[in-house]
Length: 136
Image (cartoon, rainbow, N blue to C red; front, top):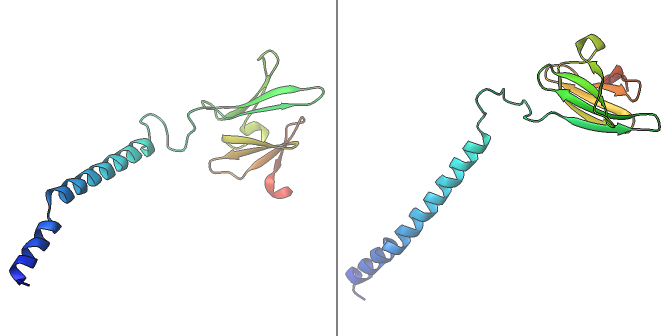
């Protein structure tokens, strides 16, 4: 077998226009995916990173109460509304022993309130009395 012919065939296969165009298409798709990921993850101007765009909401009810508990994003306080008519019933904030409220979650009779730089606080429902999470 002639080595020049074998070498020439190998170089044609390695640099064929078909392989080059497939590689360019793959690179373009990878670049588009990376751009979309960066656009989706980039923080929005005018909004602090980590700040939820929609307020946290918890619905809680028992025989005597039907409440919506909402995080007010402007004041970072917990606001309690009557779920039947939407009337605000109570606002809870720093004066009530709560941190600057970031998010809320309900677990059984407890409402867990998390702040940005403060420990998690739990509130007993329906009394809404603050208790440090470490006091469990």
